[in-house]
Amino acid sequence: MSEDIIDLSIGASVKKIKAIPKTLADISQIAKWSIAYFSSVREQMLAPNPVKVAPTLTLSQIAKLCEIDKIKANNTINKNTLNLPSGSDAGGSNIRRFTLAESAEWYEAFMPHRARPKGLLAKLICIGNFKGGVTKTTTTLTLAQGLALRGRKVLVVDLDPQGSLSTLMGMSINPPVPQEATIMPFIYGDEEDLSYAPQPSYWHGIDLIPACGLVAHTEFEIPSQLAHDQTFEFWNVLNKGIAPLRDKYDVILLDTPPALSFLTINALMASDAIVIPVPPNGLDYASSVQFLSLFADFNKSFLKNVPSLKDKKYDFVNVLLTKVENQKQATTVVRDWIIGTYKDLVLPAEISLSSGASTSAAQFKTAYDFSTYSGVNKVYQRTRDECEQFASIIDDQLLDAWLNDGAKDGD
Ligand SMILES: Nc1ncnc2c1ncn2[C@@H]1O[C@H](COP(=O)(O)OP(=O)(O)OP(=O)(O)O)[C@@H](O)[C@H]1O
Ligand SMILES: [Mg+2]
Image (cartoon, rainbow, N blue to C red; front, side, top):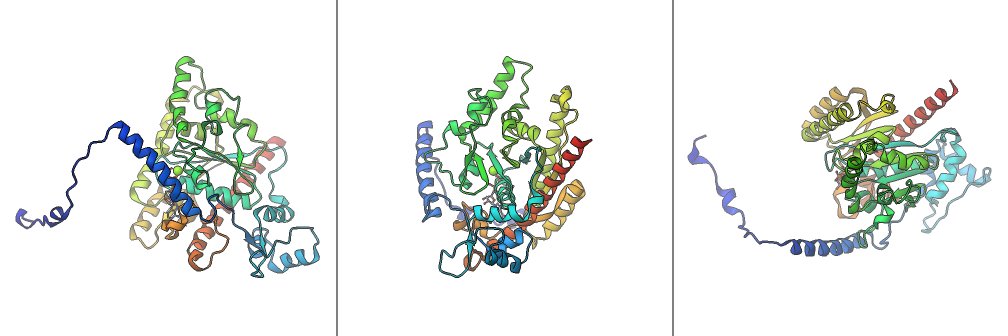
């Protein structure tokens, strides 16, 4: 193409913007204003309940979870054979609805064989990938919800100073989560372990250790402790803090920041399993490859002389395709690259890009947060079904891992 036919009209139509200088004080002012503004946006989103409210379930949904048919579920209620909650007809719609706590009673009655075997401890799963925006936080919460529906007692730990998981779980950023509620008192050595930190959430069966911006100080605190004491096990901090919680929960999910930081290293080293969410597009795929290779380099250079880590083994490592856009031609190609790279690590369940996730009503919700999936909410049904498949696959692997542990103990 010769130079004289280059079309410059796009540049010509761009509105000119003047540079407006801002001082650090101005930036503080903007930050203050944005927190207040965000608070009001969040309250409008969650209106009429500024505090998040858990959904209720139908008998069909409970029957599916309990792997029984609807007739058996109805008989269980009518004959009251197991003394299980019969739900309530709150909206006068003639459809019984059950709270999550009631649903958990049903699950326990019908699925006792799925329970964590006695004497075995919680499994820690790290949701990690150092690329931002690949759905680590959404995956953490939907997995927690899917596992809690399957009777698991779940603790989620927000390790990201952005505090997105805490926000998604309904915690306000105004006033912000206090530092004392996060992992920080333990990181600073004011608490011996993390027993003080779990707090109940809006979802029955899920506790949360929240985060706030100050969690970022871990990245200064850990190296500073290492500088004072060369024998300090900087990769083992979280593992030690969580140890006393392992017999109180079935599963502990760690939501990590988009960086291979000290916190992420700690999460990876404390975990029994890793889930790496990867949207099938070129950059996210490339980034996931770097994530694993940096982690491997780190292990080689820093941890090669740590005898206790020689036997470190993950029960499972999964790659979860997320935000999948099947109608895009590139998706098929990149999915093939991902499968070619990670082979059987790639889960047979995928989470599609949800058009629902981009609506304003869903900004502080996951696909599990709805009680009904009709009308405007219909769009979340598919994502919920996909999350259910994902949760069920993880739950199976957890049970396998416990059974393997049990078998080893019996050796
Ligand atoms: N299935 C989906 N379809 C469409 N959008 C989604 C889906 N899942 C999550 N999102 C959106 O993608 C964005 C990023 O998700 P999320 O915050 O979970 O990613 P993240 O990896 O935790 O990000 P960060 O690296 O900043 O911690 C959010 O706006 C979220 O609502
Ligand atoms: Mg996140």
